[in-house]
Amino acid sequence: MSDTDSDTASSVGEILEDVSEADTTTFKCLFCDEQWSRVPDMFSHCHKEHDFDVENTIKKLGQDIDELSIIKLINYLRLEAQKGIAPKEIKVDSETLADDKYLHPTLPDDALLFELGDFMPDADSKAIDYDEYEAALQKNVGGNVEKLSLDNDRDTDYFESYKGNAIHREMIEDRVRTEGYRDFIEKNAELFKGKTVLDVGCGTGILSLFCARAGAKRVLAVDNSDIANRARDNIARNGFSDKIEVIQGRIEDFHMQRKIGKEKVDIIISEWMGYGLLFEGMLDSVLRARDLYLKEDGLMVPSHCTMRIAPISDKEWIADASGEKFWKDVYGFDFTSMIPGGILNDREIGVFDVPSKSIGGEASTFYELDLKNIQIRDLDFTASFSSKLGSSSASIDAFAIWFDTFFLPGEKSQDATAIDVAKWGNNGEAGLGFSTGPYSTYTHWHQAVLLLGDEDRKKEVKGGSTLKGKVTYKKPRKDDRGIDVTVEWEAESTQGPVSGSSKRTMGA
Ligand SMILES: C[S@@+](CC[C@H](N)C(=O)[O-])C[C@H]1O[C@@H](n2cnc3c(N)ncnc32)[C@H](O)[C@@H]1O
Ligand SMILES: [Zn+2]
Image (tube, rainbow, N blue to C red; front, side, top):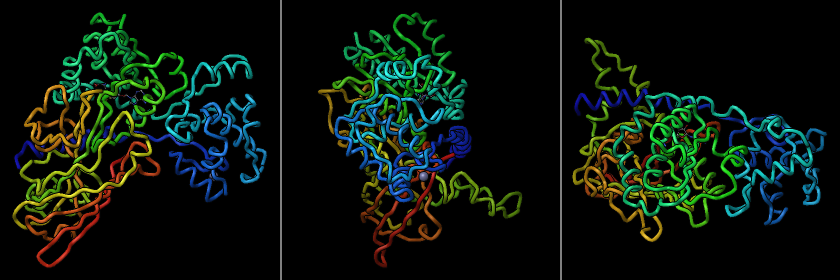
């Protein structure tokens, strides 16, 4: 391992701190004062603590339920609870919910009203139409709807972190990333000609500009961060103001629906990928945008991502990355008590450029995301993998996880898992996608590294045997932008079977 590697390691540590500052919005339980950040968690709480099955209640309301009815249901349940009625005594039926008075939020700035998607019984259900909501509200409540202030200051820190120059420069300078998008757009300009594009999280406007230059008729560039102002300037300076409209706001907000308009778009483009693919939780917003704004036969750019894992067997690299080597001898003193606080430790997911020589077995694809069809609930998952280990017996020190991104439009669509990105050499295949793995050119995503516990790192596995395992991704309960990753594995040693399990987290 070279000095540059350790430099990279520490600078990555800093980036991580920046990004992980995201705060989490919480909303109140439908029936008590407890705060929640995830709807499914609140559902189980309601079931357990209040003997009220929200999902079943919605199911009973029938297949045709739309998001307007969900708004009414939330407001109605809150009102009834305020009256002191026990949850299981509350009568819910379509007749009651026909009354538009329940459109009016019971709680001011009720964050739960931003989570309607999680209440809908299936993905094909009707997403809310702002005009409809506004009209219904105006009829009933009168006055200015804006006054209801459904906007709130959620995720302030997260969006603050995207306001400055440095983070955008880092992303643009990642050529594997930026040229990956550009090459796809330019090589497939015919897909963009005359089309409407929604750029979810436009940042500086770079992807919107690529699309407009390739011939898109209209591009809606949405970003909630103040970087939107810079995007507007960049677009004007380059003469694209007539084609690209910058809108500042959260893509999932009600007001956004009025600003974007009723017409659905042909293409959604977004660069939403985070460390370990799902850190930052931005994909949730992109999927929400897809359900609200993408035409049925519309295109998602990128279209697929695959997640890969491989064991790391390299004591020396680990000693460097974990700081063990550094702290062992500090001007002749033993400072090894400092090691557990380092950027590679047995609690957190580390972010590193793992040298390919440190990979101790074949990379295995454990999950594929088809962005056109995947649901938010599929982002918490358990998936299996297997890896043929290198020829000599050694211990496993850690696992590296990375992702590959694909642009596979319509008829070109193929099984993304069948594409062996390791064979792409350094730069992938122009226009098809890019890898963020240890065999490819460095990217600002690096790889996510899960260090095994001390005991597990002592277990020797047989050369040439196959390691089998499971990876679990789960959002931590109180941190929607974080991830908990657990890797369980089993393999053969000369003394018989060995196994291990490590849970590591990345979050605020
Ligand atoms: C990874 S950056 C990509 C920026 C730009 N598209 C590029 O490729 O350089 C993601 C951007 O999405 C924005 N963003 C994330 N979630 C959003 C949401 N729910 N609504 C609007 N903007 C969002 C962030 O503020 C950030 O600027
Ligand atoms: Zn409760």
